[in-house]
Image 1 (cartoon, one colour):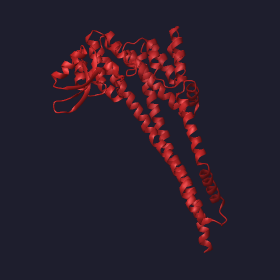
Image 2: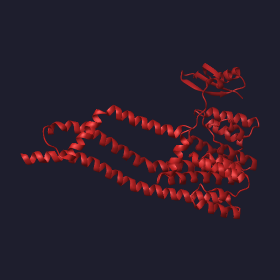
Image 3: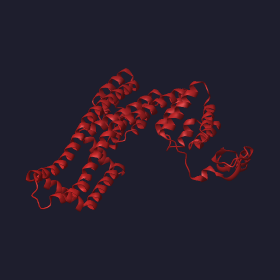
Image 4: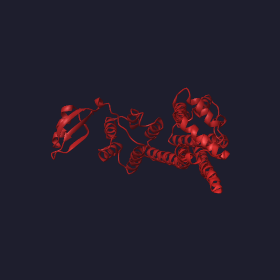
Length: 390
């Protein structure tokens, strides 16, 4: 059933906007008039050029509610209708109306979700499809809820572990540059005509260098930032950047652990939902943000499709993964083994982040203290000389 976006006035003069479902434009107008609204504008929703948007938190909330309602015995269509009525004023309300309409026509939910590839990734759609085919749709939504919760929790953990060191490092740079640009120049006049200590001369020379080349230094910093950003996003540069990151002593192992955790968690849930192994490997590969690891996983997937054992092609993972997958293949428990690998890698990643964060914070504080102490000492030494002369 078509959707129409409208703007109207209530009987009390209040403005309202929304989306309404109707057979035709005339039918949509009649429905709004029955609600005692004076229509100021109404057009087909497809002509608005606005696509529904949904945040991760909203997607998690909807997924959790669908699972709860299905588990309570509510039919799928009634479940979607309940959601549509609950979220009438949300930006993603048209999405729910469209899902209701498609399911009412007899279309599968996974196919309806597939028409919104920017909102629902292939893994989400595949798990819904597997639940439909196995008759365990409620279990699929419960697993999807766990997957989204774990994904959000995992992301928050990484952000929380890196936010403070990044803030402290940025603050350290800002304080040092501020001292060189504003504090030191205001004190230089006190020491004109005097022979200065080499440390003081070095700090003053560095301050003069910053002041003389502020535009150039700013431009170079901006160019380096843009180059780093380009390397992270440009299709031709990103593979080289990803490969370089994996070779860094500390960053590389952390990236590998994080990527393996996401890959194995996704693979475990897909296999548990009944997705075939090759399709599971293909879908799980999409959660690997590093292209070097994606290429390695793609090559492993090709070898598995030709009859090779998965454990023999898992060399891109941490060393424990191939051995555990080999045991899983022998016992026929590859899905649960993926879950165990993810748990071990996540635990190892958490310990590593805590260890590096605990070590990095005092190092940054020490650097900040040394920088400020050096600048302050360079000022105190000449003042001490003046006091001795007096």
